[in-house]
Image (tube, helix red, strand yellow):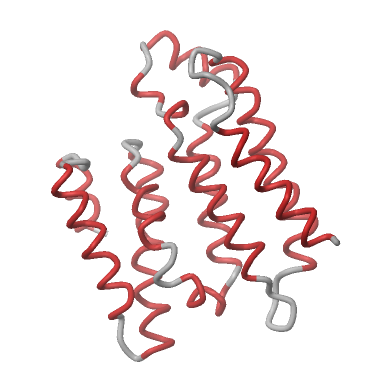
Length: 193
């Protein structure tokens, strides 16, 4: 029952991310804070104890968690650089910082927690993790780009090559290049890590 309840909570959170109109900024930001704090609490109090480890790992729960964290980080409302400077400052002050960074740190921590189970998310989550690295926030990029390299290592450790990651990554980067979604700073940072 715990598994179903957690998955339902995460699905509700995913839906809530897109529920309110964009002009309801204060409501959306408050909801985002509740989602962020709830996710951290669920991960630390339930997921790590009940659904992590060789004999207890539950891919569905962790996959849903990653999808929610990625949707949270990449949602349009949290792209602060699209807002006027005064609104950016107000949001950062009220919410104690950029919630994308907090969730990015959570993504990195969760990715590191799952250890040997990382391979079960390859190549499925590569495109989504690349989407997170495209968010034009330098600290978020620095925190999350290493996950892509870690996926290469996990794929190599499991298969003796990294063809799965390589193929998915090339497809994603090719589609990004055709849409011109990345900025020059992204390319520099990606190749320098």
